[in-house]
Every structure is written in C-alpha cells, then in structure tokens.
Length: 549
Image 1 (cartoon, rainbow, N blue to C red):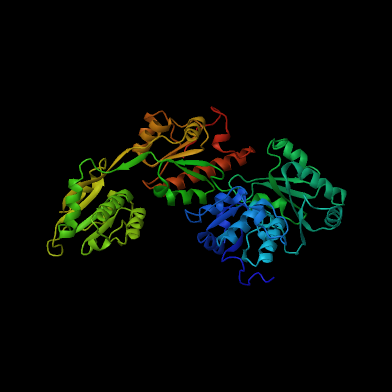
Image 2 (cartoon, helix red, strand yellow; image 1 turned 60 degrees about the vertical axis):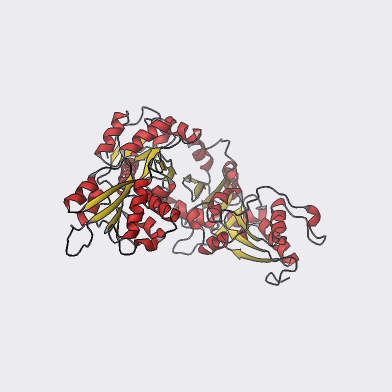
C-alpha cells in the first residue's frame, strides 16, 4: 500500500525520526520541526532526553505499552509493545513522533512499525538521523576512509553470521563493528579467525558523541588486555554498546592528532553554575563548547518589594512622561517592570518617547523579548561602570527631562546612581524586586557539591559564594574554584575555599574562558608527564597539586 495514500482509519500520522547517537546537537532541523508539532512522543530511552526538549510541554510521552491487543486488525501481524503504542496513537488521530537512536533505516524493529502503518494506510514519513556507526568514529577522531578510497563494511556483531565474518576477515576493508563492551574482544577474535592479522589497528569507543565518551586504541590481538589494563573490564556496565573500528587505513594511529572531541579543554567536566537556567543560558552554551556539562543551581530567589508603592508610582511616571531614560541593570529588573505593566494592562508601547538602557546583552535580549529595543548597551564592559562609560551627560538643550528611572534589586550597589548624578541626571532609584536566598538544591546535588562530584564551580559574585555555601555546603577540596574578580575571590577564601582560577575581566564569559585555559594547561601537563588525563573529580583528595591560573 502506498504510505502517502489517504488514511482510512483516522487523520493521525507517524514520523519515524532518527535522533542520532547521543549528542543533542546532531538532531536535524527537520527533526526539531517534527518534534515541535508532535502530540505523542515515543522514544528509545537512550534518546528521550535528547528529543523531549524540542517537544511541546503538553506532549504525551507514554513510557510503557498500553495498547489494546484486541484493537489490532486480524490481518496485521503481532507487534512489539512500542509498535502497539505507535499504532494506537496514530489510530486516535494523533501526530506521533517515533524517535530512535541513530538512524531509523538501520533499525529492523522500526521497519516492522513502518510496515504496520502501511498495512493500515496510516500516513508516515521518515526523518533520517546520523547513524552511530558513522557519527561515533567521527567524534572519536577516526576517519573511516583515506585518500586511497578503502572499502568500509558495517557489522552488527549481534546478528552477524559466519559468512559475514569470513567476508570481512578476508578483505582489507575498514570494519565498523557495533557490539557491546564485554563482547568486543570476542568480535576481534572472530576477525582474527577469519584472516585478519592480530596486529591490525583497532579503536573502541563507548558512549560516543556524549561527554562520557571514552576511546581506547589497541589491536585485534591486544584489545582484551588494553581494556583490562584500563580497568574497563570486567565491569557491571559491560553490556553498554560500543563502536569498534578495525583497519590499517582507519587512521587509528593518528588519533592523537585527530581526536578533536575528547581533547576539548573541559571535556567531561561537571561544572556547577550558581545561577538559574535563564541567567546561565549563554554561559552554559559556552561551557558546552569547551566539552563541559553545565549544572545550574539557583542561589537566590526573586520576590516583590516589601512596599510596592514606590514601584507603582514610578511605572505611572513612565506613562505620564516623568522620565527621559529608564536603565535596566538585570534580567530580573526587566521581569519586574514587565509584570507591573501587565498588572496595569500596559505593554511595550508605554516606552514610546523614553530612552532605554540595558547593562548587557542578556538584559538587552530580555527587553527585545518584551518588545523593546534598547537605545544604549555598553560597548565595552557589561557592568554598571561600562554603562556609565557610554552614558551621555545631561544636556538641557537636547534633553527636555532630566530624570532617570532605575528599577533595581534591594541589594544593588550605588555605583550607577552616583555616576548618573555626576553626569547631571536626577535619579529615581527604585527597589523593583528583592533577592533572597534560594531553597536548598536536591540532596543528590548537595552530596555532589560536598563530596567532590563536581569538577569546577564558577562564582560570579560574593553573594553566590555565601549563598551556595549556605544552602548546599562548601565545595570539596578537589573541586576547581573559579571566581569572577578579586572581591569574589576574597569571599571564597574567607569561606575556606582555595581559588584556582581568576577571570582577567569581570565578565562571566571571560571567567568561563579562563577556566577553559586552566583545563587546557592541566591536560597538557598530564600528557607531557605521561600521565592519564583525568578530571579533578577523579583524583584522590589531597593528591592534587595547587595550580595557578
């Protein structure tokens, strides 16, 4: 039956979607589009977290089979539980996304589900994904072909028969073997028995394309010893999937120069960022680009001011033309003014005729999301001092009004107020919100902080030091402490923390960059000494030398 023919049972449709081998960045644009419109998301457990973030909040994600076997037509063969979920949702007229690891075209079970849809006339489409057998070697720094155009053969060790092993063993093709960690030595043995030389180069990669990725270089004859020496086997996790690449021309010998992913400066580091997800978004993206895993823990919570009358008068003043400028020094200030606007039934049009300043890019983005394009964003340092550098002095000829509305936190500094007054402006310094200590993070996070489960902590202010220690305890002494400036570093030291990294400028992005430089230097030192590259959390307490940033 034509899979694009009209649906005879319902208006539902199914998208069979390849989610790739694990890195969320490998999803295709078409995959993201399909996920955004899904009513039901049925995903392999390995990629559920990868795809769920692109789905709507109300998407249904059934995790267990619940299909009514009696509802399956007699001419449709019995299907697995996952297939029953897909069919039941499609019959109900839902838009179903069936997300699988790698590429759906290489999944035999998914082929069954496609045939079932075709048998009932249910419309379906296929969104290809990056297959693990292709994506993982690329992330491991192992090209599958060289300039001489070597043949490449893909083998699934679970289903390969004797003929398959014999054909590959008798050839000089690069073999990409999908197997499990505890079966990789047996697969190597099959190739040797079929004719491959025991000294044929081999790489073994586990958790490919994720920050848990690890790759070992060996030969067909030595792989068992290499994994044992690395204390990888025997292991309770021996059943986890691996991709092994075998061949003289697979560039395994050049992996030290081609391993671009695992050689990132903060590869695999768990970095604690004491900010909310919204505040830490761009910082977390930067850390991910260095190979780190960012974990956000809010240390402050935002609450309305104790006495709202001052804020109410200021907002009314905006509407009546009391101000020439309004200056936003944080995303929270934008949020506080926006909430007050909504309370009064106002929108961004109330800013007409008023100049708007933002202390930095994140604050400017919050304003744009509100519908307001700021007139002034610091060209240099993104701080109150940077804002003052670019702020024009009051000019009675060009400025009909001499007053600035400054909505800010209850604990904000006076730097901006004093600077604006010095420039000739009158300032209505208004408490728009209060910052209070956040609730403690989950017990698991607290234990990781105190027990050395994090590799680094980024402190962006003295208050983040005090509040994190107050709600979660003091970070373990193996954890790298990175501070945004001298005042923050002093507070950290007062709390008994050793400061390893200091940002050269008071910028969260420069702080992350400084941490990356620290990680790169640490990695280079280990390689030069002939030591294995480890994360700080992998080292024994007290064994770590003090390092300077």
